[in-house]
Image 1 (cartoon, rainbow, N blue to C red):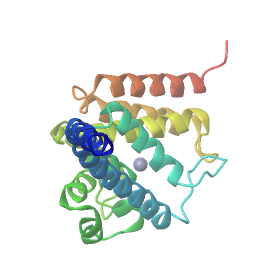
Image 2: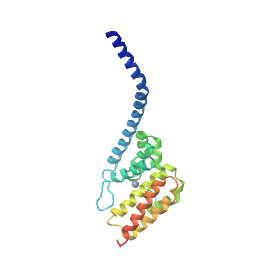
Image 3: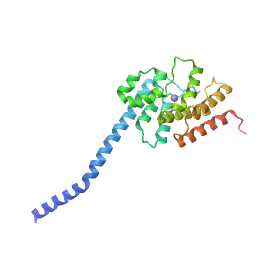
Image 4: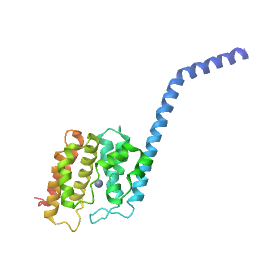
Length: 216
Ligand code: ZN
């Protein structure tokens, strides 16, 4: 009886193991790759926080710059349904070369060439005068890759939200109006890749518009 019971137990255990194994293997594999991706995203957030440690947003609250980078990364992650980890990482690092002169090689080394090339695609050439850089942004927007377009649109959305909610104290109304106009011109070349993000951009631009006008 004891032996039979033992055999039964073995058979029961085998059946369970047989039934469960495919799920265990599948779950284990997907869990492993997801954790790897999470780790890379957290590494990018950590790198961005360190690189931009002394930088603040231009609004009166002088928020840490990482707030902007996280907002852009969240917009990108949401717009792509969480399906493009490298684009989220690139969003966290999108101002690293332009603002902190982080060498491209350093980004490639840790996050790979795909991330580094997206960051390069959204990086302005700081050796050019500001007016020229703005013109180039407008002229080249439509030539960017779809992923760079999504990232740029998220960046402009975050900037417009900041203009509406907390404009830089030294920006005149004229300068704020000009910035919204500039952002709309760049965004015109970025359309057609993500309807949700376009809607969020349009809402941010409308909010910025409303912020210049009397409440009634
Ligand atoms: Zn930015």
